[in-house]
Image 1 (cartoon, rainbow, N blue to C red):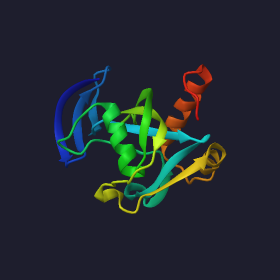
Image 2 (cartoon, one colour; image 1 turned 90 degrees about the vertical axis):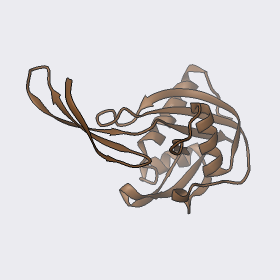
Image 3 (tube, rainbow, N blue to C red; image 1 turned 180 degrees about the horizontal axis):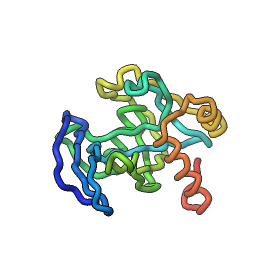
Image 4 (cartoon, helix red, strand yellow; image 1 turned 120 degrees about the vertical axis):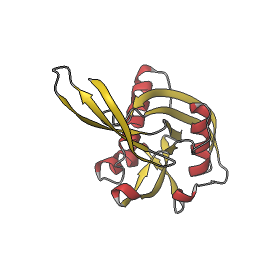
Amino acid sequence: MKTLASSVVYADNWIRLRRDEIERSDGSRGTYAVIERANFALVVPAENAGFHLVEEYRYPVGRRSWSFPQGGFPKGESGTPEQLARMELAQETGLRAGRLTHLGLLTAAHGMTAQYADYFLATDLVPGPPDPEPEELGIRHAWVSRQEFEEMVRDGRIADDSTLAGYALVLLAERRGDVVIP
């Protein structure tokens, strides 16, 4: 596809919506909507053969759900993916990771955005006070066993695709012998 023209339809501190006029390889023309968002980090905090999760209200889907801690830098802030992962973990759970292991880099909804996520396994966890952002008020944090995690996926308490991707990356890393969940 070839981009013929591009215009921003909407923008705020977190997102830009772009409408592109395109030409396909067969010469036909059309439009393509693209969501521009900054990359994010997702953290899989693991200890005692289980995981720490957060539960919060997710406005776009109109419900509370459980997930691994994740997020992006606020507008005007930047840093490395590891710094972002440490910040999100501390903000949402209060936990600090003694060790972060990079599990992978994946696209998020590659049919509508070029956003990527860096996935990390956090171990050697130390508790501390959480510091949620205003949008995260009411966030809850809990530890669950691996069996409970999988039950939560089956019954819909975990519906976040990024959380499932993080779990899949952990399983692959375990299979290769790259990580051991304490």
